[in-house]
Length: 116
Image (cartoon, rainbow, N blue to C red; front, side, top):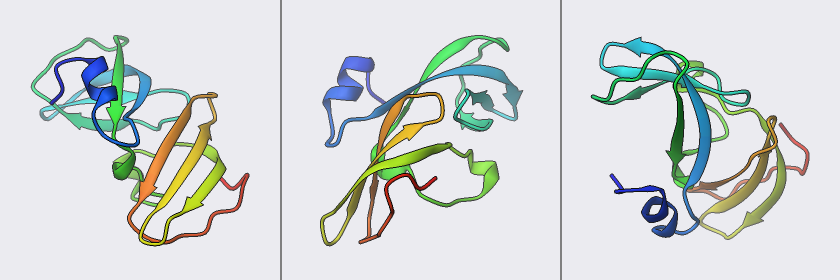
């Protein structure tokens, strides 16, 4: 729970990804947020915000996965670069809204440049 965006981005390697999102609503103790590259996702939080409110969502690279359940929220983009490091793979992606993010997978994986 970093105190601000500077601290969130400064701590950790690679740095945290930041996405501008819009609140869609509130469901059972969670805000539902999305943007042009992120399908609606529930973020558990005691905070309240009205639908239409703009927020910044921080996602650590190790919490992004290439597959998942649609209810977990899907990011849509293409692979720019894959760096295989043996026990982990670091991927640079460009989301369909043009934002670049980094994902760190806890395994050796192969992804072709341009793959979605």
